[in-house]
Length: 76
Image (cartoon, rainbow, N blue to C red; front, side, top):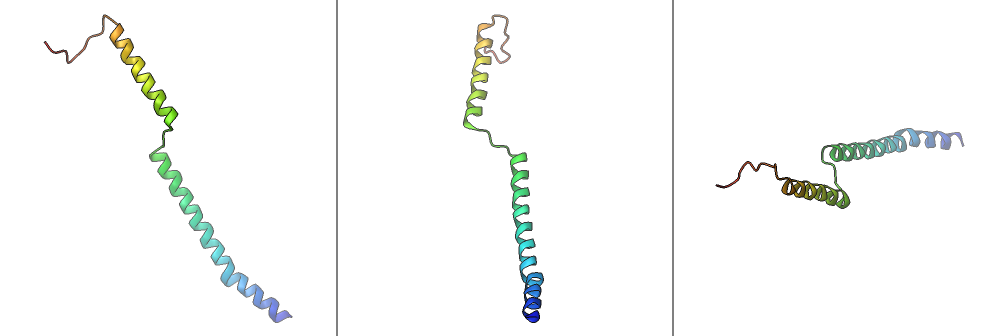
């Protein structure tokens, strides 16, 4: 009985624990890489892209309505 218990403990220390540590380290590495990628290259949702485009169009309409607006590259 004690030999079987010792064999189980040895298996836990030599096989299962390192396997779990490697798996957790790999999962943590993938998670950290994904977080870093999303921080450097954030993904903009379609709704946010449409809001940005709407603000750009509103700005251009305000430019066109303003009589004092000066166009720099105005052809002569």
